[in-house]
Picture 1: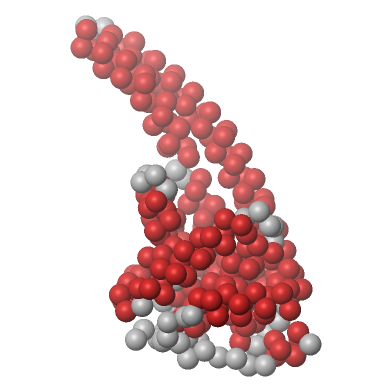
Picture 2: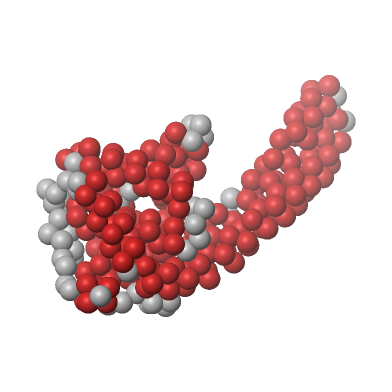
Length: 264
C-alpha cells in the first residue's frame, strides 16, 4: 500500500503560502504510513552522525584542556618577562595570564565546529534530495540515500552550512533568542542549495525575497520546526527524519519542484 503511494508522481507547483495545519497533518499521515524507508535512510545518516558527534565532543573536551593549559604556560612565561618591567609590566602580565588560557581554548575549539559541519553537510544535503525524490514518487529511500549524491555541489553545500552555523553561533550570544531567529529568517537556504542547486549568495537572496512576500508562512513554519526539533532530538533516527521530511514538504509547497525555485 505504502509502496504504491510512493510511486505515484506528485509534483508541487510552489509559489503559495503553506497551510501549516494541513502541512503537519499531511506530513504525519504520510510519514507514519511510509515509515520503513525513512528509518532505513535515517540509519545511514545515523552511522555518520554518531561518530562525528563523538569526535566533536571528545575533541572539544580534550582541545579545551590542552588549549587552556598551553595558554596558561605561555601566559606564565610572558608574565615573568613583563614583571621585570615594573608595576605596569606586572599588571599587563597578570592580564595576559587571565586571558591567554581562554584564547588558547578558543583557538583549539574554533576549527572543530567547521570540520564537523563540513563532514555532515554533504550527508544532510544528499538525504534532503533523496527525501524530495521519495515524496515526488521518483525513487524509494534506502540506507544509502544519505550518500547517493554526497559529492554534488560540495562548493555550494559546505559554505552554506558553515554560514548558517556561524549565524546560529552569533545568535547564541543573544541569550539563545538570536539562534531561534535563524531558522525563521533563513530556514530554507539549505534546501534551496540542495534541491535547486543555488549558490550560497543566491540562496540567501531568494530566501530574503520570499520572506518579504510570505513572512507569515515563514514565521509559522519556523516556529513549528523549532518546536518539533525540541522533541525530535530525543528520538534517534525517526525524529531527525521526520524533521527533514517536514522541511522538504514545506519547501516543495512554497518553492516548487522545478529546477528554478518559484519566488512570487
